[in-house]
Image (cartoon, rainbow, N blue to C red):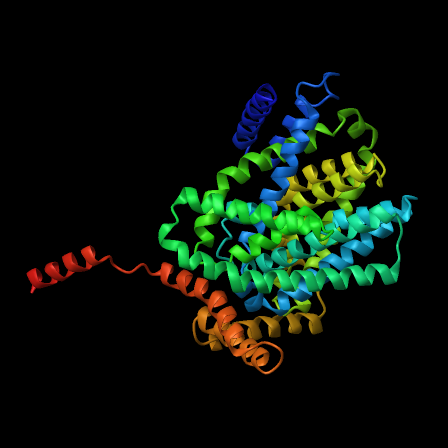
Amino acid sequence: MVHDLYILMITAGIVSLLFKLLKQPVVLGYIVAGILVGPHLFGENLVNHENVEAWGNIGVLFVLFCIGLEFRLKNLVSSGKVAIVGAATIIIGMMVLGYGVGRWAELDNMNSLFLAAMLCMSSTTIVMKAIDEAGLSKARFVKGATSILIFEDIVAVVLLVLLSSIAVKNSFEGVELLKKVGVLAITLVVWFVVGILVIPTLIRKVRPYLNDETLIILSLGLCLGMVLTAEEAGFSSALGAFVMGMVLAETLESHRIEHLMAPLKNVFAAIFFVSVGMMINPSSLLEYWPSILFVSFVIIIGMIVFGTLGCWWGGETFKDAMSTGFSFVQIGEFSFIIAALGSKLGVTDPAIYPIIVAASVLTTFLTPYIMKATVPCYNFLYKHASGRFRSKIDQREKDVELAEQAATGSDEDKFLSHADQVQHALRHTIVTKRVVKLFYTNMSENDKKEQSDEVLPSTPKNAESDKKDETKDA
């Protein structure tokens, strides 16, 4: 086992360093490292595949747990229409397109459904990294893009559960599927509400005794406990990890947990991507290269079209909508997880896995260059658009600017107003005043802390020295 870990780490480290020097995402380096240590390139296994697969499964849990930690309800609420309309347009549009491509390629319903699910999710990690490297972190479209990615992550976890159920029964039973969706929705709401009522209160009470070591152990224990709960309830372990991440995201210690989890997540996520690379046969890439290029083309064009339309319909300016669409032109983590699920359950064609991974690598490589084409493409479309459509673009730009200027109050006030509305509604329906108050407190306390962290107050010591300086100057 130590030998396997050594081979994995040293190969992944060297290859990822090389990719860093070439200014390429390290995820691609991990996949290439997996190809190098896998059984296909040199004809023998340099590592024990079962060990790597077990570590990779743990990596998936940690990745989803950390994605859940990045989830902020206030961000989703503040983006509202853009997040829901944009994500829905992309997911539905790409799933219909992916399913159509599968049927056109004469794949059966199961393969086509899995292919559709693989093509409908952009990579949160790669999109945010590309935006950051392009110096666009403060751009107006980023807030909406982030909210759409969060919404996609939630849908992806739900898709994992539904696809597992469909694959096990190997059939599409409409009534059964709707029943499963209903049970899943109720379960998610119950878990989330109960978690918000109990866990933040618990952590707040023991906070004075939580050092870094105790906090990370407690967080991992809660995560694995929810994983076991999800499995006992008949859902995937990934769902449990994601839900617990969402719950802990609403605690006062969310950023601290996220910071402490980062090294652990990076190590096991690297192993997961290496395990993905180990399943790729380089000769199959040569065999399926026309399919790889075609799927990559479908991803790029589909994401640009549906991403732009979704954000435009969601109320963004046409330029911001195009910026979002042009940054979503790749597939990533969840596509790998869904592809691995299909292979593990034996319900997908063996050719799909290498095609999807290769298409992901190619689209990830092209993402920064496609993003640079946003402004020239926008200028071209604006110049050649009809007068009526140009007037709509200009009017939307004015509307968005006026809305930004008219916005009053801080983000906290806006969030609290939404929370007040929910609180008022729940008080008069099925939830008692005490429960609503506790829920409201746990949801908003983390936001108050974030707000205060933005402007750090002087420590008593510093405040005292500042007073002395002012007296001295006087």
